Length: 192
Image (cartoon, rainbow, N blue to C red):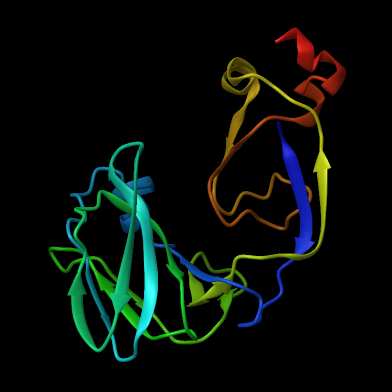
């Protein structure tokens, strides 16, 4: 199914769980960094305490989720990460956090505040800290369905910062999609 969500994000600490989404392609193994070395065991340091969840993979398409109690000083993950997608704050207020790859070449600094912004005309965020997972005033449009084969045959890549999606001035992540005109109506769902 291909749902489309039209909503506003409410930037508030009281809006439920907070997450930090990795932006740098070295964490995601995308673009020029797709062949970069594995991240390894991560070093996590904070000046205050809080419980976090690191979400990533230990090999291509092999999900790894690890919960860590961040406290004063430095902790190391038990898992050896290939890529990292996000860090969720499971308890407490937003905390300052520094996450480093095993070789120390890939570093993410998260400030203890809520916010994300990209300066006009830039490819990099000027602020990428904690963001709420929830949305407010959301409307979900379910536009139809398609098979994996349809997505492979008719789908196309919408890279980060693409201007080809009418609903958005640009896309903030890489996407794979198919035009609504190629989707099948729901009354045909029983035929698959």
